[in-house]
Length: 72
Image (cartoon, rainbow, N blue to C red; front, side, top):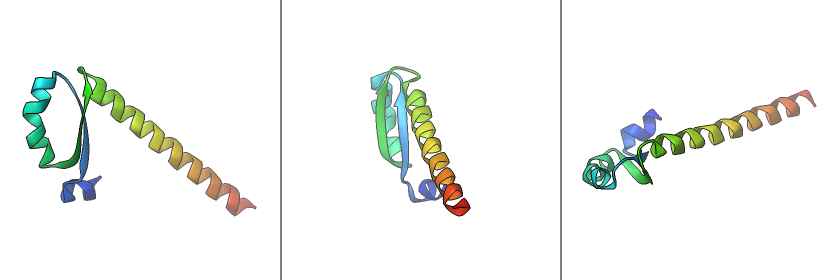
């Protein structure tokens, strides 16, 4: 989020040509503490989508548990 961006603690999941990733990695490390090469073009986006889906599932589970607890 915004706080991580300000602190330079973003995570970048990058797909593309590995040589190009290596050339850009130094710049990305100025903005993020985790820079991960995921493979060919599109794999970084796929990893990010999976990460977001897992986070959403966790948030839904937490909200449902809170709702159930309040109702009991």
